[in-house]
Length: 468
Image (cartoon, rainbow, N blue to C red):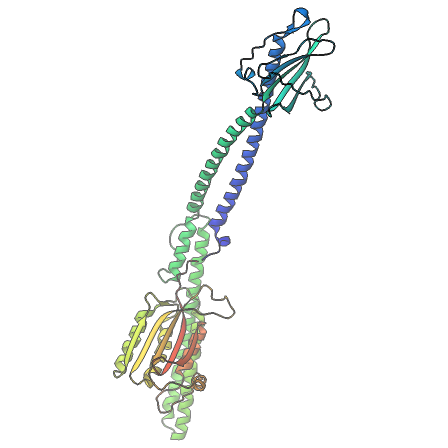
């Protein structure tokens, strides 16, 4: 499982989501602020227009009284406690009775000080207040001289601010819903665009999985120009790796061939010597042959150990080895249990040499039964984490022979050490198994078998299909 922070798709989607959220929230706040300013400005203009309608409708009548009946075309001025009022009050020595809208009734509107809300250049002022019934209102006020006698009056018109808030709330709700839908749609489109845009990378990843699984030898197909150079470099790296492996194999083969003849000559000439001398020469030549074979194998394994092309299906190889062992040891019952789909990340000859040595050793000491089991395993490498992406196969070989005491197990793994001289062999088999498994960074160990004899557990690398 890949951590979320390491997923390119998740990171791009997260950045797009954060940017879209910040952008849409900013846009929503800016538009709401501009709309509020526009609504408030329109509300002020409405009150100003109504104020001058009242001014034009009021005059001084007979008996020095204020007279007039403004018609503002809004029923709210005639309904009580609506917050929509108009009021005309005489100023100075003008002692006429004030005029007020029906909606105001007997209530009064306080007059704030000029220091708090001064008149503007048009001799108008607007101020908020709360009326007697708790309505939040905005008052437009001016003072007008009504005749040549300098008789003046204060004119005020108010409107309920709930109208402004309702209008802004109505607009803001639809704005936020619209922007949310737009943002969600944008995220879906961005997500699809990102997924489609990254599709070639996913295709390249699957191509690499096929190479690692042994199903292909190079990345095939056309890729966008941003990815094609990466595919070309990977193919060049695979080809270079192949050439290195082939060159190492050829050098190992040449060295083996060049040493094979001199060692064979030494073994042949040893037959013409006295028995004591012949035994010494033969034993030393055989030791040389074993050492050469061991070190050549180690060189070959090191050359191709990390190759993505090394692959060997587990079931066919193990079945072939067991089939040979059954033919050579008909008196012994060989049982084989292999988990499906296993494949070694090794050369076939290395698998045959390691498992074959274990089978030969088990058959040599078994009484009547040898059990072979192969399945997946967990193997920790040192230093920790070095093989985090590698899979492992555990092959166990058990026999029902005499087994080994715990103190004898360490001796059995030493090169050339034979604990039972009555049995044929060179004593190199288990040490070779240990060396090959070590070269592949695997593990090998001996313990008591559940069927009574010795259990050999061999851990070898597998072809992994991990898509992390």
